[in-house]
Structures are given as C-alpha cells and as structure tokens.
Image (tube, rainbow, N blue to C red; front, side, top):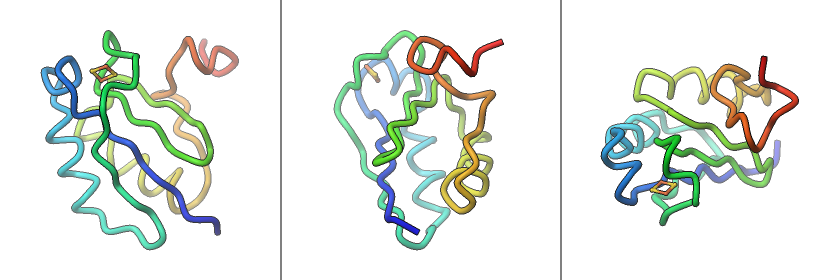
Length: 96
Ligand code: FES
C-alpha cells in the first residue's frame, strides 16, 4: 500500500465548520502509513470542512468528526472512496 497524506484544512471557514475537531479525530485514528497534515485553505471554503487525500487527489467536503471513521476505515485502510462525502464539483461523476 502506498503511503497517503490527509490534508485537513485549518483555515477560517473550515474552522467555523468544525475542522479542528475533524483533525483531532483523524489524529486519534493512528492509521499506519498515513500522515495527517493540518493545511492552509484549500480553496473550497463554502463546503468545509475540507479534507483532501493525496496522492489519490480525492476531495471530501462537509466532513464532520463523525465521518472520520468512515474515511479512515474505507478509504485509508481499504482504498474504497466514501462516495457520500465526495466534493460534487471536483468529483461530479460521483454525485447523484
Ligand atoms: S477555509 Fe478550508 S478550504 Fe478554504
């Protein structure tokens, strides 16, 4: 499995949407070979909290602390993208 990075936006709009709690939840997961990185604004401020997974270039939006376990178990451990949290503009083929 390639190592992944999870960027969790810690800038103004995302912080107002609870991104500090989202970051704390990711840090609490301690997933092997995955780096959790607090990030600058990712330019998707109206759909925070923004979470971006590299090198996959998968963008999740409106992420809540309660969503973190799904991303961790499904995507980070098993490479299964969590469709319901995908950013609709960046990943339009997944939107319903
Ligand atoms: S403040 Fe998070 S994407 Fe801009």
